[in-house]
Image (cartoon, rainbow, N blue to C red; front, side, top):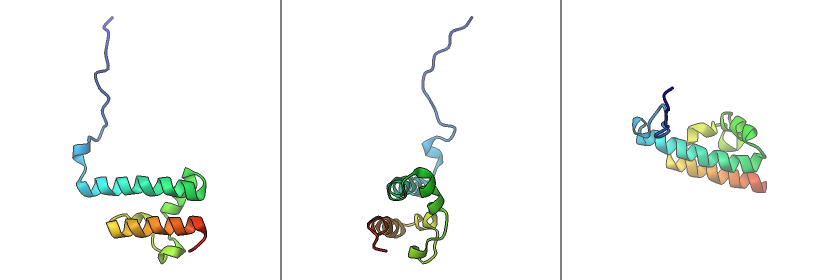
Length: 87
């Protein structure tokens, strides 16, 4: 019988395959969903909110705002206001 050793774990999609824009989007998404999880109480509710038009954001989709740094800032500020009940 041959013994096998795991040398390293790898992803099916190495980091170098994604563009800088994609990396930025995924990092912003991760941070917003963590904040959303704190605001809404759990990950499922945060993810559901993330893909539906939000009245406080002019009925825009939160996920679409992550394309730009300004959109990310607007989204983060909105979640803080929502958490404090000032929206």
